[in-house]
Length: 360
Image 1 (cartoon, one colour):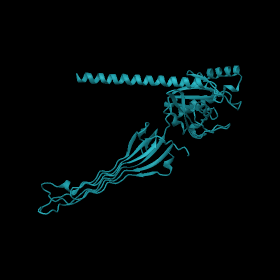
Image 2 (cartoon, rainbow, N blue to C red):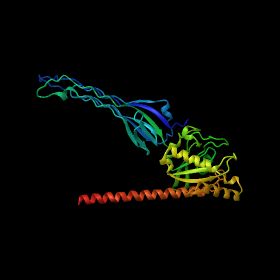
Image 3 (spheres, one colour):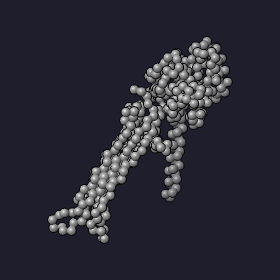
Image 4 (tube, helix red, strand yellow):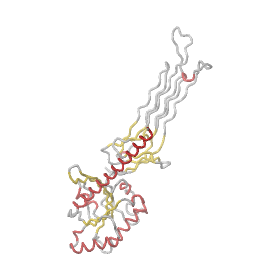
């Protein structure tokens, strides 16, 4: 199935049912009053995050969703039936925008998350609602309100802990194959990866994280060169970015340092927030050079880049240095989780203290 991470859909909430005009007609009650019931409410439309769906491809075939209308009221003060709400399944990680205003409506990041995207219309009043001391026999009823109608833009952002970044053929797909069960295409030509791939990296019993591999970037991606920046959104939820650099590119004229700087510049053009994420430098394909030459070249690359973050030297193909890399990633993710848990506990403690002081 083709990977699709954007879709435009139209949603229409159900209309409310019309109120009824009716009067009691019973034996021995010569002056029966109005008894027209209200119309039923129209149904709403919800988008629900469910597991097992990995793309928005289904929305290529069905782009319009309409909820049930409420039924009209009837005599004897009977209210019409309400429409049954429509739940549309979407992948976990879907972000919902209003197409006209570009307003973010919801972000479904957990299984079971759902958001109302089109409200149903209220049912109209029956004539029983209009009776009064001066109007004993009202003969009017209200039509139901129309359901909400809007166009939505859906954007899928993969849920991953770690994202791979780099030029085409830097070895991203080879690395994710080496450390997980993911099997993206690998070949000796650029842009073998045409859509994102996810892999679960197991570090030990009960210890794992998710790694995302996206198509490679090239200089000028912000202007549409190569595959552009369309897949960078899938790195926005990650905690760590691994910037892979091929220390021995096939073209002798290519400079790994210049290429690494170009990728960092494209990242800033796309999103300053994404560029500010924690980024590790991964010097790949060290097995292609003699150990002393590889060591010297790696030190020179780090020096020229003035890189201050963690640096790892690996060979994804030979699985050299990959164990140490994934152990370090797992440790950093666990450390970050502990920091978030501590901050959350401290916030809850302060809120409890404030509530206690207000109660006293």
